[in-house]
Length: 412
Image 1 (cartoon, rainbow, N blue to C red):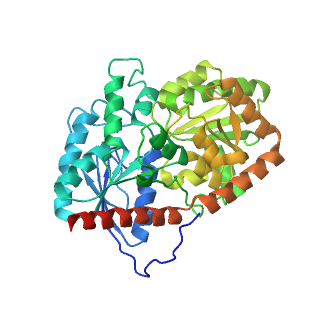
Image 2: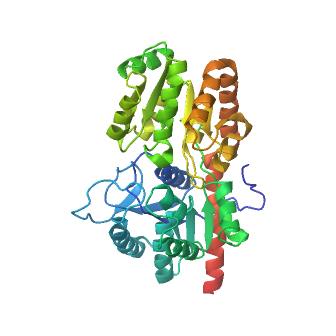
Image 3: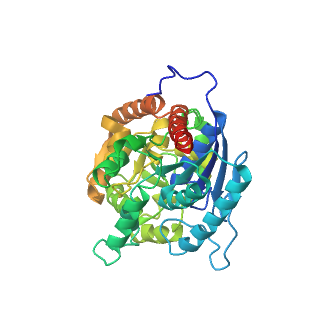
C-alpha cells in the first residue's frame, strides 16, 4: 500500500545519499537490481545518489558510480561469499570516505552486511545517519554458499559479527516481511528501527506485450522448437539458487512431457550446468543463454509459458518472482516464507529442495493452461497493486526523514 501524503509538506526535503554497494555493481542480478531500482526512483523523487562500489561492474547511464581501485590478483566479478572481499571492502571503505568528503552527503545507505559495516565507519567519522538495506541473513547466506559450516569453529564468531552489525545503523530497511521478522525474532532488533520495503518491480517495463512474431523469431534464434511449451528461469546459476534441483526436475518432467523446453538464463557456472544437463539427457530440452542484460529481460521472459524460482535459501529475497509476476507468468517456487509473501495463493508450490515435487508443480501448470493463465493475470495485478517502486521510494524517503531529523536533534 502506498504511504499517505497527509501532513507532508508539498516540497519535502530531498537528500544527497551516499550508497555503499559491496559488490561488482552493475551485474544484472539479485541485489544489483534492487540497488539500481532504488537509485532510479530516489533520483526521480528529486534526490542525488552517489554509489560507491567495487572496481568491476557495468556502468549505467545517469548513475553516479564511484569505483575502488583494482587489485591485480582478482579481476573477475565478485558473486557470493569470497575471502577476496576483505581486500575489496578495505578499498571500498577508503573510497567511501574519500567520496563522502567530496560530495557532502546527508545520509549513508549501506547495502548488505559489508555495506552496513563500512557505512557505520563512514557515519561515525562524518556524523551522518546510517540506513542498512538488509536483504537476508549474512551467516545463513554463507552457509547456503558452502562458505561457512554451521557446526564449525568459525560459525559462532560469524554469528556474533552479524549480531553486532545489525545493531549499528540508525534504521534498517528489509527486502521482505520475512526478513523483518527474522531481525526482530532471531536478532532481537527493536521493531521501531525496522521498515519492511519489499523488492518491487516496474510493471510498465516488465509487461507481456511482445508480439507473436518477435517471440517466434527469438525462439528460433535460441533453437527452441516452435511447438514446445517453455519453462523460463532468469537469475544466478548456483546450487543455493536451486539450479541443480531444477535440472533434476527437468529430467523427470521431460520423460512425461517431451514437449517441454527449459530456457535457463543467467550466470556464472554456465558450462558446469550445461554438462550436468547433458549427463541428465536434457541436451535437446534445455537452452542456456548465459548472462541476459537487465534491459533485455522482458523480451526473453515473454517466451515463457511458466516461470520457475527454485531458490533454496530460507532467508534471502527473491526479486525474480516480481519480474515473473509483472510479466503475467504463472510461477512455481519452493514453499518458503518469501515465496509465499510475494505469490500468496496465486503461486504453485513444491516441497523445499525436492526435485520430484518441483517437477510435479511445473507439470500442473503446463497441463492446465487455463488455470495457469488465470494465475499469471492475478499475479500481474498483485505486482501492480502491491509492489510499485514509486511507493517503495516514498517509504525509503520516510526512513531518511526520520533518521535525518533524529541526527539533527542529537547534533543540537
